[in-house]
Image 1: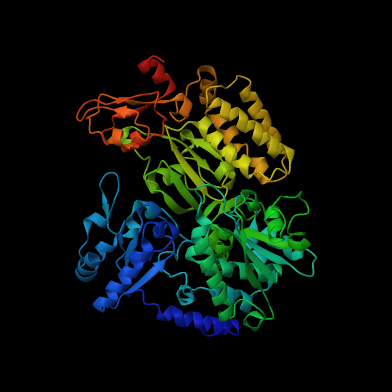
Image 2: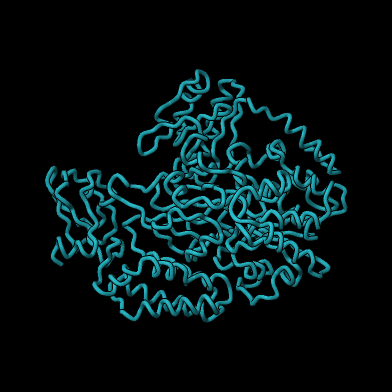
Length: 635
């Protein structure tokens, strides 16, 4: 790769690669994200390349970033036709090449079918993708993240060249303010204001940080962006550094993300070779470089002051604010911190303009940067939903569209499972009931419901979910992750955990509900950082919307959510065919019975692991709620 010495030279290099990319070329894109790699995408890619080489075909095989539809991997898309195949195996390769690539014939077993057996041919037609609006993820599935020429061919670094050739730093700051871009890491603070405060702060040196410390259970948005398009994040950071006057940057990324770190380090090396990182970038006198800092996995280090302490080599613990990092951050110098997805939006705002960005989303940012939620948001859609994975949607989209149109509805709906709630915002988010399914998803509207946007975790729950158990799980998680520095968070979470763990064992007390609410109010008002001030959300939101479940646990010691281990029973019904699968799978040999005869479950041996329930193909094992236990078993 030749080195660009001026913005104009960089534009020429970009144009050369844009022209070299043939949109009609025959290409095979294989998802190489962590999810698909776990399903065997690595050997599949190599086998594709070997088979194509052996057949002497003029076909390029691209290992791309995450396509989003993780549970269906490995995913394969044939270009330019857009034919979409899922769960592809090495043995399928000759048939794909001979039938689909050569003759245009489709292979039914590899095509996606929804619950109604509707078959979909092209990737963009699949319901999971059809209603998404991909901006940050737009290049995933089309480029190899390890190849700089691929990024350049998709207008990569054009925004940086434009900025350095035509704009002053103050103009870029003002552009980002007017765009209404708000932080995608959880707080939703206007990005442009952060830049403004950092630029105006006094200091002989300024720093810039990319927060990739993604700690929410089930969340993998930032990881997939870094794995699939690291140059996009770097370009956003370089533009941000120019705007705020920073000369040194850090990407704080979890050590559990080896592929993201590998791709990012390669991208940094490639960017230096291109001339867009380092000293005197593109001959403009602007200098900026980036280092990777590997985090140890502490959830609290997602908070910006704790993250700064970790980079400095100290224990990751939040500090009192003000002063905010924009004034006094890394090593006491002005520091701007934004998360991965926020940085990835910046090049698009420069390339396509403020008006384009503000046309997506909700609210009016013309009068205030806090006046709306603009652009798109990537969510990690997981839980009791048919189509799990990463989805990028415009701000303001209704929850129902995400869960039922993109997500394909509730898993097991044909067996009677129904939607109960969705938790947004990760462990510190709230649980939203079905009556708000048509509510728009944006920063402000989720806050009104007692939840939050967070970094983008979205967990769907069905009617076999106990909301008391949900609150207990997340409180216990946060209790372990709390740094313990401030009393409201440290002691509040411990006390909440004690109460909720008693409650799921059927030992709750009437006064517990008032205590939980009082603890939540104190934690919200008095905690040092966002972890503590939002940690009570799972409890307070479930108390608000599902109070009867708490009251039932206390009054009767029963769990009608069919989840609290001490309060439920598994029961074999008359639908049992005697196939013996459940007996063979049971780890404690609690199930007995002859072949083709009704089986029996010994409750004294049952540990309620649910293996039999998952294994039964005849819907003959039911989970009895507390009420049903008394009615059917007389307990």
